[in-house]
View 1 (spheres, rainbow, N blue to C red):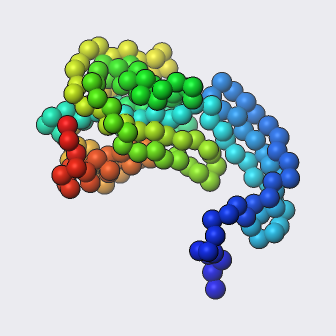
View 2 (cartoon, helix red, strand yellow):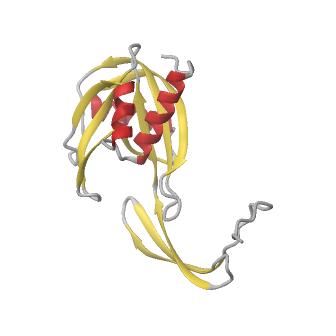
Length: 192
C-alpha cells in the first residue's frame, strides 16, 4: 500500500520554529524544526531567492532562437541556455526580461508573451521562474555584466530541441521553455 492520498491537497507538515542560517544579496537560507507527514520530528532547510528567475526565448520569423553559452560556477561546467537572469520582485517581470535579453544577446524584442511559470527545484527552494517568448526582434550590441563571459549562438528551434534531447542543454528553465515552444510549433500554436 502506498502513502498517496488523492483526497486532499492540504499541508501535511507542521512548522514549529524557523531560523535564518545564512543571507547574501541574492539568497536567504532558513532551517525549520518540523513534524513531517509521517508525524516524526525533522529539520527542513530552504533556500529563498530574493529575486525572480527570468528566462527569455527569442524567436524570429524563421523560428530561429539564440542561446547563451557560459561557465556556471555552481555546477563547475560550461553550458548552453536561453537568456536568463534575475528580476526584482517589485519590478515588472517583462522589464527584467527585456533587460536580460539585451544584456546577454543584444536583441531587442517588440513583443513579450508569457510562456510559463515554474519552480526550479521545489524540494529545496521557493524560487519562481517566469519565462517569456520574445518576438519581432531587432539587433544591437550585447552588454553583458562583468560576471558574465558569454558566447551567443543562433540556431533553429528544432536544433535547440535536439540539443535538449541529446543532453547538450541541461538547464531546467531552458529545457522547459524549448520543449514547450517545440510542442507549440508542432501543434501550430507558435505565432511569431
